[in-house]
Image 1 (spheres, rainbow over the protein chains, first blue to last red):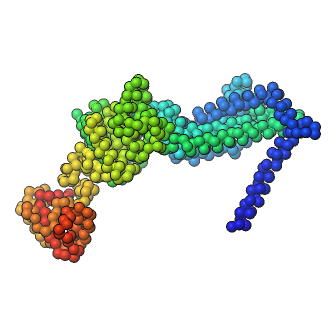
Image 2 (cartoon, one colour):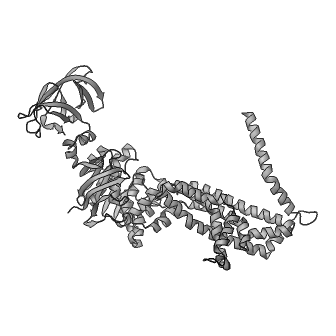
Length: 262
Length: 352
C-alpha cells in the first residue's frame, strides 16, 4: 500500500514537472527583456501593441458569435434527440465527434472550395462573409465540447416530463425551450461556452487560411519576428485559457448549490 | 352528451396493441379512476386524452369539442405527474404562475390566482421556496396547484401519489378529492392502488389488457365484479369451484355441500362447473343466523392483525380467507381445529 502511494507521488511529481517546466521556462524567459533584471517589459510592449488589441478584440467577438451559434445549434438538437429521437443518439454523438478526427486544415480547405468567389455561395468574397464562414468553422471545432456539455446537463433533468408538464400548461415549443429547458441547462451551456471561448482565442489554422485578423495568427506573426514578446503572449494566452477553466469550475460548483436540480 | 367522451380508442406501439377499443363517458365534475396492473394501458389512455400520444384510431372530445388531433397545449387540460415535474429553476409561485403567464393573463390576476392556489393547497407561506426545498408531498401539492391555476376544463392525475410514503399518500389523496369536489372539476385519476381508487372515486374503470373490464362505482366494482379479473384484482377474493347439480332448483355442489343459488345461474345447465367468489368479509366463522350456506373445513392459518384476525380455512382442495374482529375475551382459533364457515348465497358472485 505504502509502496503504491510512493509510486503515485513519483508519477505525479514527474507529470507536474513535465507540464510545468516549459511554462515556467517560458514565463521566466518572458521576464528577461531588460538585460540583467527581471521585468514585465515584454508584457507592456505586447499589451500596448495596437495589433494585439485589435486581434484580441476580433477573436473575443468571434468567440462570442461562435458561442451564440453553438447554443442555437446544439441546445435544440441535443434536446430533441433526448426527447424524440433517443435511438439517434449514437449517430449524433458520432457526428459531433468528427471535428476531433478531421483536421481543421481539411475543414477549412473544404470551406474555401465550397464557398469561394466562383461558387454558388461566395462567402469568401467579402470580409463579412468570411467572418460568417469562420464563425461556422469555429462552431464546428467546438461542437464536441459544446454537445457533450449540454447533453450532460440535459441528462440531469427529466426532459420528457418537464416538457409534458409545460405542454399541459399551454406552452409552445419556443416557450418550453426558452423558459424551461435552457434555464435548467444554463450551467452546462456555460461550461461549453467557456471551452468554446478558450478554443477560439487560440485557434490559428482556420483564421490564418481564411486570412482573418485573429489572435492566433497574430501570435504566430509575433513569434516569427520577436524574441521576448511571443513568450509573454504565450503566457497571456495560457492565462486566458486557465481563466476559462477556472470559470467552468466555479460555475459547476455554483450549480451544486443552485436550485436547478430536479 | 357526456363532458369527456372517449370513443373506440385503439393504440399500438409497433406490433404490440396496448389499448383495445376503449370507451368511456365522464360527466362534468365527475372523478373517475383508471385502475389496473402495470402494462394494462391505463397511463396510455390518459396520455391519449392529454394529447401526448396519438391514438391509432378512435376519438376524444372534451366539453363537446373534438380534440383527438389537437396538440397538448391546445386542449385546456391540467396534468399532475408521478415525478412532480416542477420546474426546478422556478420558485413555487413562479411554477404556479407558469400556465397563466403562458396564457398572457394580466399581472394582477396572476398574483391573485397564485395566492388563491397557495391557500387552496395550504402552503401560503412557501411561494418563494424552490422545489428542491420542499418535501415530496409539498411538491405534489404545488404540482396540483400549478395544474389548476389556469382553470383547465379537465384535470388528469397520472399516479400522483405513487412516489410518496404511505401516510402522506392517504392525507394527500383525501386532500385531492376535497379540492376536486370544491372546484367541481372533471378529473381522471390513474392508479394501480385499489384502495386509492375505491376511496376517492365516483366511478372506477378497471383495466386489463388494454380494455376496460368494468366501469362502475366503487361499490359496484367491489361487490359485483363483472369479470374474474376484476374480482381478483379488486380486494381479496375467495374462489370456490362448484358443479351445478340441479339447474332448475339453482343448486350447486361445493365441497360435497349444497349451495342454493336459485335464479342466479345465468343459464348454466346441470353438470356445468362454476366458480363462486366470496369476499372475506362475507364469510363468517361458525354458523351465523341469516347465512343460508355452510361448509366444513379445517383451520389452516391464523394471522393476528390487531383489530382484525385473518383466518384461512382449508376446504378440501381450496383455501378461503375470512376476517373476524378481535375480541379480547375470546382467543383466536387454533391451527388444525375443525371449523365451519357460513355465508349468505346472496353474497356469492358467479364468475364467468
